[in-house]
Image (cartoon, rainbow, N blue to C red):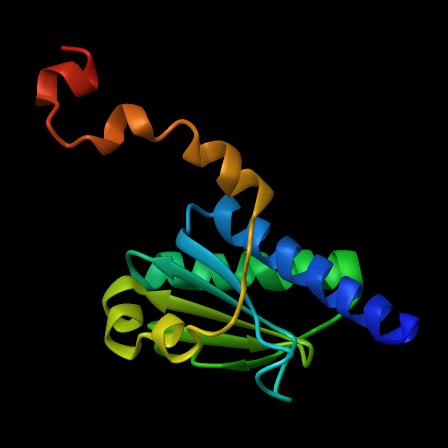
Length: 147
């Protein structure tokens, strides 16, 4: 791969990681980055995130837009902001999908793009190391909440 293409992909990857971090700042759940460059000409990366309410979906999308604008001086084409159940931010090289949780499950983008490699998100990796204490599900309410 020519070095200029590697440089462009590296910039796109950094943009995708920044978008994922911005989503996590607004408490998005199930944030995923898929590297789709080898599978489609539409984009290099998809960032997919979920919010529990339309208000949270909108807040996540706005935070991503603000961060990418300030860090990379890029503004997206936006679709779906009116209903806020699925907002798409198209930056050309990355496409960000912010879903309301039930809508994401219905469309199943990760299943459609299951051949795409998943890129680890640094903050999510460190947060995952804290999860085992709550992941068991067998804890009582009192044990979990300290009462």
